[in-house]
Length: 397
Image (tube, rainbow, N blue to C red):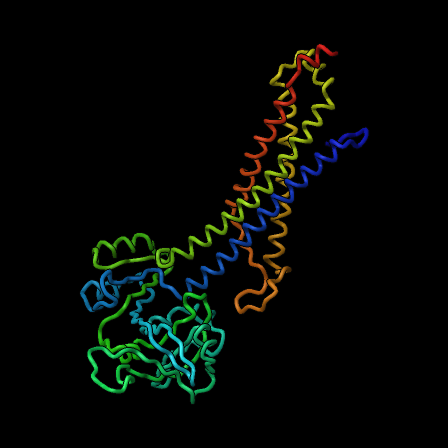
């Protein structure tokens, strides 16, 4: 590849092959790191609004939280927050516009999560102030209804079906209607942005549920073994309740992120395969060019394995040099993007404005092993060509 005499087409093809491996390796590192960054941002937003452990009943929508075990659980020294949640679908009206959304009533411990402020786009995450109840609405609700959180004279009206039978000519009597003032707008992702968060006392009055809850949300102090805690709670509660960690609460989100990551990896791997298999072409041309040299080496005592090893080593050298340099360039680019955010996303977002980067050591090993495996196959094919027709070549000489 680094011929000292003159530049041949073989040298150019070998250089192009190395460049292809270099670009492919760098692209793999960069794309995987960007996907890691997006995954980290999405999951951090998701984690800001979802508990580490969520307890729900298997049968029905609500359950009584006053059983002895829940009282014991509430006193756990490792517990950071214990939130009772009462949640139900409801009709939400603001002005002359209506939308079907979800009312989520939460107890006071919900606000112990200081990361909630990072999800607020407008206003503040205030649920109680001056003896008055307030609501924080998702962006879907706010956008559909045109809610102005700074207008305290225009409350939100929430309609919920009245429990029990109602005999009345007026259809409105079949609904419980309550008004609440909006204090802020939050944005996480589409799954959560149709929620109206209220104090649980407001939700109890609206839904006529003086004691029952839909779920209990638990967050623990740092260093707590969540897997052990989850298993212990499952054993105590039995089959009547489900106990889910964050991943189990939204398996589709985690599956989608994982599928997208591996789909991109496979696409770029195919590009790498094409680049690396160019080595077969360059080494084949080299074999043709060095037929006499191969025959001379064989006459001097070099066996077929030695000759194959020469071409195999050259193929691996071209691939691995390109891979190592590509990984180094990809790492350098990621570090620059991570600290300076040079490449912007083109849209003004409240969370991120530049493409996020999250470097994971296993990605570097994955790229190196991928290039190495493909290189072994390509170099092996080329090496076998080097001894094909060796006896005929020796006879011709």
